[in-house]
Length: 601
Picture 1 (cartoon, one colour):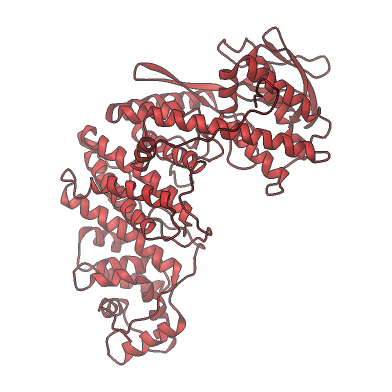
Picture 2: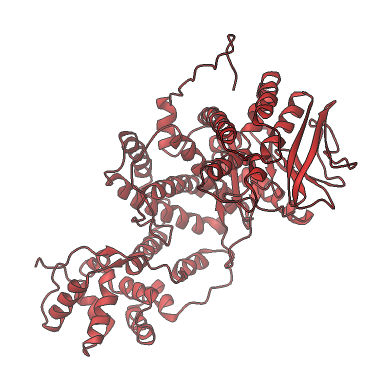
């Protein structure tokens, strides 16, 4: 935003990614210095986005409605930046400011729609101006829009104006180091100067913080339950956490950082160098921890409250991996793909585009790294679970990285990045700290996901199914058939019962065992009757993808039957074809026949 001495726009500078940072990030690492570099580049991006929003709003008739002209915002922001550049930088780097910038530009470009007029979203600019002026000690009077009778001041809190209409405006004054909102004769604002601890007051909901220590230094992370731009999409209303819930977040956050620092001090320092806010969201109906982050909001994480410090640490690692990669992707192009959702991601139920697979693989590279380092520090009662999670995430990530490496849409930078990921994973192959029985369960869980994904989402052609049926009825070996096509089936949710059973059996003390068919228990016990048990389930529901998956896993337990897992998607449609011909056969017989290597036609 600054200009040079001749009042001409300063020349743009290009960021060059140091090779050491690139290679460290590719390996899933990147210490505090790399994160600080990424924050610097994100600041440049925020400045560009802010300028783009101001320019586009200025060219769009009526974009700011009853609010001041865009030039007044430019003047206020440049004055604050000149007076207090570091404070301005930190303000602009708030995750919620990034989300607002992205949302505002999408609205201006008609690729997003809000729940109110355009000016109500774009006018958040003037609340940003007010906070910038407050931080810099610059007097300012301006007008801000109301959202549901309130106005959010980024990084400070929410001014609630009782009796005001949901949509309207209010006057804001910044003077003598204080900010006040003046609708008519009411005065609402932070109860203390910005340097003092903030608390709630009549008409004011302060942003609350989570505090901890890493490397002997204090860590302050916002627990954001009021900013309308704290989400990934449209603005959302405030949802104030009760005090006891906020205390649980504080306890979990502090203990999670203790876990992370104990096993990986560099990652703990890197994470707190970039993390700025946590936004609470509701957990899934099944109690699974939900989390998300956005490339628009560097340093922000949305999550439901994890149940224990280790889960909390894993959640932070997971989302901060996305944060690092998202910032790198603002600097370098790693893939040029059309966005088709076509790849199996071992941790997702739906097909993923190449970009999504890259993001997921990178997140799970960090998770594998965490489990590798936490493994030897895990309490004795949790050791088996740590071994399983390390082995499973490593297997899943290796599978995804192999898929990435084979995709021609990677750029040269992308190939170098994926090669760095692969090299890191190679160091964990065959880790002797994982006991063979636990590694076998991890292999089963990985095969379970991959097999069910194929059964649900891959469809052989009708002609291929008819050819297979003909060969089966004539007692000849199955012929080779064309590759299946992608036909995603997202109509029913997966239960993941077998993976949950494994985790239950490894847990000490054990949790309540999830309900599961006897066939699943038999499969995990290595019972040779498991295939027969799945046949009984398929007699009740011959279309069940979970039962077909279990059958395939139960049959493919020897070198001669393992080829079945290369094409399990043939089982269900072939069984259906034989039923329609009036010549049904048992699923087990069909599975053993399809396990025969396919013969060329």
